[in-house]
Image 1: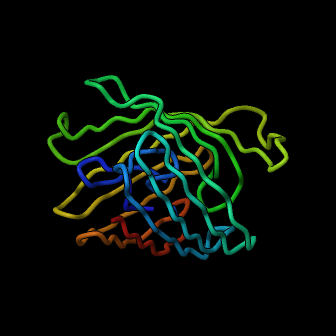
Image 2 (image 1 turned 180 degrees about the vertical axis):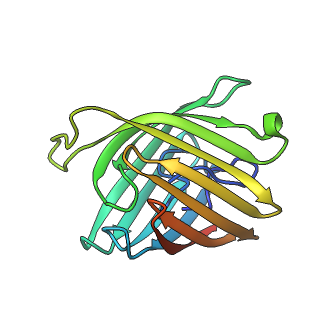
Length: 197
């Protein structure tokens, strides 16, 4: 959820953990807790807890209201961004915003702050839904895309495509806290909140 992608303190990615599902960009030693409520989501409400110890791995758990279940999450940053070469992240956990389907993904992530002269980031990649027993729910891999930029001091706008639908977030940050509105499929509006140490 929007308190994540540690790109100049601003996000760029998927709800619940909206900005952290397809990234491993928390600073080492950090914790992130976030949540989303949107009546249009099949899950209705999601809470995510992430931790990144030292190194390239980020661990988390997603708690879903419907079905009442938990999903374990793991991301690994295989390569850090160097110049124009993106960071590369792979992970398992959830695929598709607000739905709760297990999945796997790989993304390329760029911090665009120096290029755009404002805190911003972009990711592109691919993902696939899988069941807990390893069966795929898709005929093929689906594209993933997300962009976030600071539109005013402490205020971020994010758009993202999770392989099936587009979603948007507008959020404001005050210290370690973030809150905002989340447009699921750009059809229903909900709220998001987040805290990062």
